[in-house]
Image 1 (cartoon, rainbow, N blue to C red):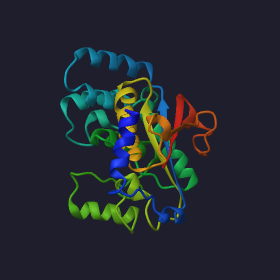
Image 2 (image 1 turned 30 degrees about the horizontal axis):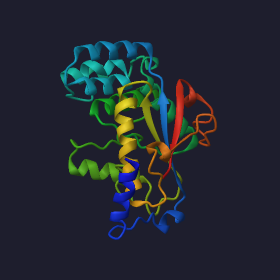
Image 3 (image 1 turned 90 degrees about the vertical axis):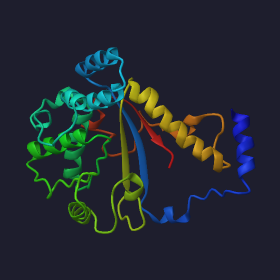
Image 4 (image 1 turned 180 degrees about the horizontal axis):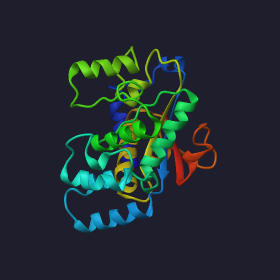
Length: 258
């Protein structure tokens, strides 16, 4: 594998130039952390039962359970509206590892005066977070909470984008870390520890990122796909992860080379 990658990189060298760009030096910086958080006993039981069903919806149900157990039936029957009874803002937060962590992050960002972008694969997960934030903090939707999804009308979407950021769309990490950014960008990839999400989905993502880099960057290590990660569990420089509630229940933290 290592020798094959070196040959392929040599073959591509005359045709492709890897250049990170000097413009990155003018931006305030970016940190990219993968946070491996233990799930709750209730979530673990539901995952075990869900896996026993052995059907094609396991990954979808598992993704819902990782956020909060209340989402499993919503994932099973289908999402219809943010006002579904299963998405009300009065669930027991402690039962959901990811939900609890995200709400703690929201509170920290509010206290620090930071803006927060939350990306999710499924609308019902975002709807639950939205409802919980509104319910617990008294924030109004469309004022303090701005939401973007594919079901929004163009006018609604444009309004939300403008109110959050007047310069560009803020749909993804790369859009947050952009020319004109005045504050450092911190990325938190919240992963359910010791689950399919960690061992399959995340590992696949790391391999793809590493492979893309190793093919074009002559300085990238060819023999270890984890070379783009650094274990910072015992010495994380992030002000939110280093202390406080975000460290509770966290097994390990990895920082990704950007």
